Image 1 (spheres, helix red, strand yellow):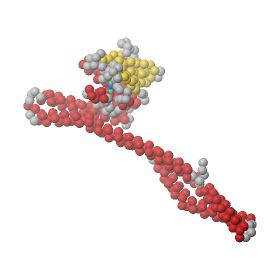
Image 2: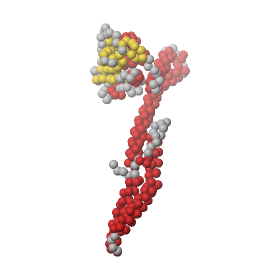
Image 3: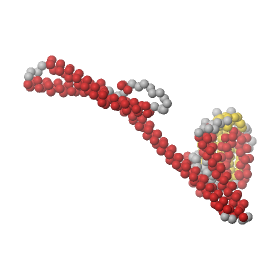
Image 4: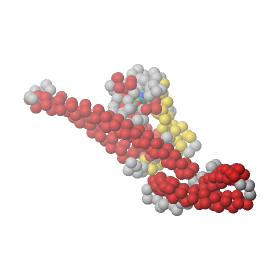
Amino acid sequence: MNHTDPGQLALKAAFLVTVIFSFLFGVLMEVFFEFKILPLIIIDVLLFTFVFLVFRYTLEKFIYQKIRLIYKTIYNLKRPKGTKSEKRDYEMNSIENANKEVSEWAEKKKTEIEELKKAEIYRREFLGNIYHELKNPIFNIQGYVLTLLDGGLEDPTINREYLIRTKKSINRMISIVEDLETISNLEISQIQMKMVRFDVVELTREVFDFLEFKAKKKKKELMLASKDEKPVFVIADKNWIRQVMVNLVDNSIKYGSSKDGKTKVSFFDMDENILIEVTDNGSGVAPDEIPRVFERFYRTHDARSREKSGSGLGLSIVKHIIEAHDQTINVRSSLGVGTTFAFTLKKV
Ligand SMILES: Nc1ncnc2c1ncn2[C@@H]1O[C@H](COP(=O)(O)OP(=O)(O)OP(=O)(O)O)[C@@H](O)[C@H]1O
Ligand SMILES: [Mg+2]
């Protein structure tokens, strides 16, 4: 490592000047007078001391003090806000140290800027998505109300029908806003999980009952891996896990196979955790879309083209809930074969 503090630099400079001077002075003495070693040594010592002091003073005064100031400013900028400034020995820090710290600082700032840029793109996409999702129901409601005001209200063939459609659009908007509120609360950790012990098999049966009508309408069968599944106790927030189950089973009904559609829920004992799998034999998700299904508002190409999907918030909520329990969720899927969502819960 190079040592370039002012003292060492001044030493090197003084040494160089003295050597050059000795050589020239020696040659001149030899040519014009007689070469004598003692005066040369005395002059060399004086010159060395003089050059050393002048160099050291100049470096200190005009260069190092300024570098130290920059270094100190950067060090204070690097320090997290609110932390006390630690007393640093700036004297000891050479240009290399300052350079190293400045490079580290620049690298950190670069990463921060990249993250901010990503967040900005994400924010813009998010706003665009909200606008896109709310635009349709709002314009629909506007259309129905204007038609009713323009005489439709007195027309018995459409008045009731248009009010029912208006109600549907309003319900859709309410559902999007509620989902967004849930995600936002889960993201800022405002919701405390109320951890209780419960039987997750029984909860799954409740969810099956709740979605039975929808499943029957779409000719889908909901089943447990084993008919006489024994109770499986976990510790988690029961209401939120019900929401997870509803969202996953609802997806399996919506995106399940139109012929012989089946949803199967299985439970596996994994030492400390219980692994719960929700499997369907539906359309599946393309490999390049799998990593994106948990994103807010994301819908696969297939779902969008068939217009059977919702707003793409269900799985984002599911992931937030599972992560709020410090557990994990993942998905396996093959196009045309089916999809399995697997998540863990703490066993008791
Ligand atoms: N079981 C599944 N099989 C195939 N594709 C699925 C399945 N579950 C989810 N997907 C895909 O992932 C996307 C995101 O699912 P998510 O539940 O977040 O949204 P959604 O069902 O479209 O709307 P929401 O749940 O908000 O009503 C879906 O639009 C669909 O494309
Ligand atoms: Mg869904």
